Image 1 (spheres, rainbow, N blue to C red):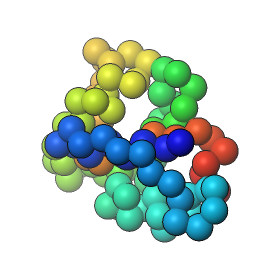
Image 2: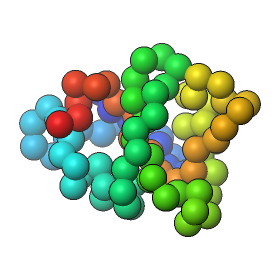
Image 3: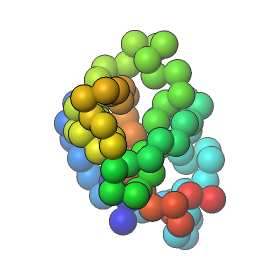
Length: 88
């Protein structure tokens, strides 16, 4: 089950609109822009806004803790955390 983690700390389970995989349009809507996919330390994927830091989106502390080395980088904006099989 995918998790949608907002930068304000709200964390909820999320399922794709149609079926078992999120479409590119769904992913872009969730992160409010172009997507970038980064690996989480547990093997899942974190879908982030590719231009989030350039747009000065707020830091997402919960999502940043999922990075392999959370002390060396951080994530901004709303994100989707999911398994590879959940992305089309």
